Image (cartoon, rainbow, N blue to C red; front, side):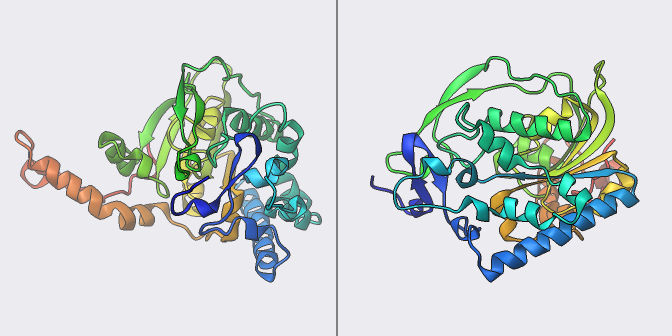
Length: 342
């Protein structure tokens, strides 16, 4: 098959399965005994142990959720010419490295084992995309609930619609490879009570799909039978701030859920919110780099989005019928620093 530039990072497997193999995270290269990966695994071990102990000091519990790479789960769908040693999966190596750290090993959930056990019963990922499907997300969600003693909800239902779409991998091929995607509305009882200024701006201007690290939302759920605990979830596109992935499932289960798009933890935020449970979710391929848990969401938002928010505010003030903060006598707020929420 003729491919476009960049498609060398996509492996065309059996039965329409596509796999990300390279890129900035050197995906296939992580399945190796290299010194670099050995250092990475040791670094992640120290990080998870520190997170578990840090949460214990604050009176909360930590769960570490690694979303397995498609290569780790569907290695039997690879075509000739590509093989990976699943035993060298970064997620599996980390769990082995935590063998003598009992509490940290319990906190590091085994999604690899859970996914491989049911991989042939349902598609846990979209075949043309690097992300998990509802089935994969739901499997992880139920594992999280089991780990913390929560009662999972059944949000499967029938899809509201089906769309023929090429995922982030299929779109790189020529011609693009697409598949039918089931579209489900996962938000039932939970209500989003806070979105950071950059989330609101990007949603209002139709650019929410370009927003990643620094996105921040809060959901509350007052429905009968909801688990009364408060959760802070640090994650990436597998969790997401929109009600389409893991964040939505968690929000339908717990009374209050804070989502911060970051692989790093913001300990200051955790101390202010005082959750019962902290979840650190990361895609396995992102284990190529170690997060920095000195992350400060407020400072990051101000530096990364402050200019964009200020320009949007100035543009809005110039519209007819709009008065500026100066004219209205209101003191301007610090751009992008609405962190704690309501």
